[in-house]
Image (cartoon, rainbow, N blue to C red; front, side, top):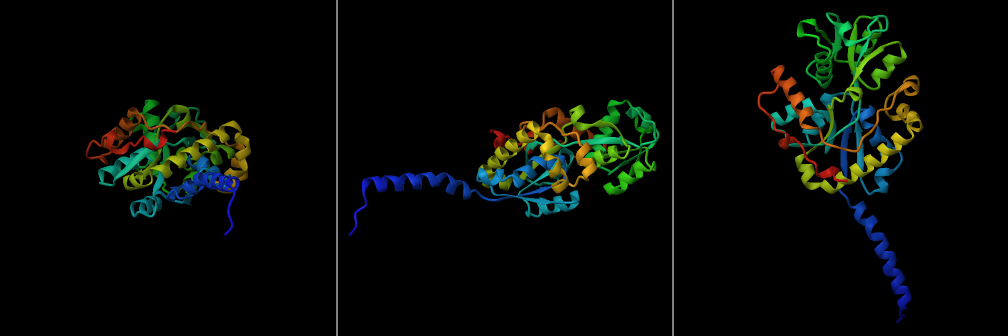
Length: 310
């Protein structure tokens, strides 16, 4: 029988121990996340394209959706572990009995664009003129919030529901709408074609976009979600430090045209944090005013700070 030397055994033990962290990380439960191709999701796309998820042992699959209805249906059916959503939608889902938890705000951008030849210089210039929205959505919430700030009464607001974003974009650019509420990349697409940006969420501090997981997933995959956030913040800091490096990715993965990617003003991505009580109260008040929220959903029902204790 052959005898192994102590030095050989020591080397073997060292090698085995060195492998343990990677084996442990590789065993982390996988996560399926529903996203749109937009500014909110860009750090996650960087995690995917630059291998940040895998380097930290996070097994994350990004599933891209074209509509909120399809995304929410997949989430409610359990086909997704989490989604990028918005405060009004989460409050309505909680009211309907869905068990979910907001783990952070996201740093996207929603805004109001005026038609190129409208001559609009501020939001008050849209009084009495048609504004394109998607009814009872985060876009509707955002537009109402900004028009409240501008002092426009309900009687001065003329909303035209245009659910399909590409149609809404063309209608405002051709003057069929005086203004329109929309997210990126449509905001920048509109600007590159002469649209006038009157207000945007990142300039005005309106917290709306959120990352949310089912409570079942938060209970069973908490460590994996923590790894996801470590990866997210790593990617966010890279984007903040060198935003121009990521313009090609806007075209490749975020649905931007080359012209829009060149003109895009990057949002400043912040360390993951929860919505404040003021954010939640504002969304609740708006939903109550529309008759959409029937009970007072409490912050404690929908907030979970555990994953972002980085």
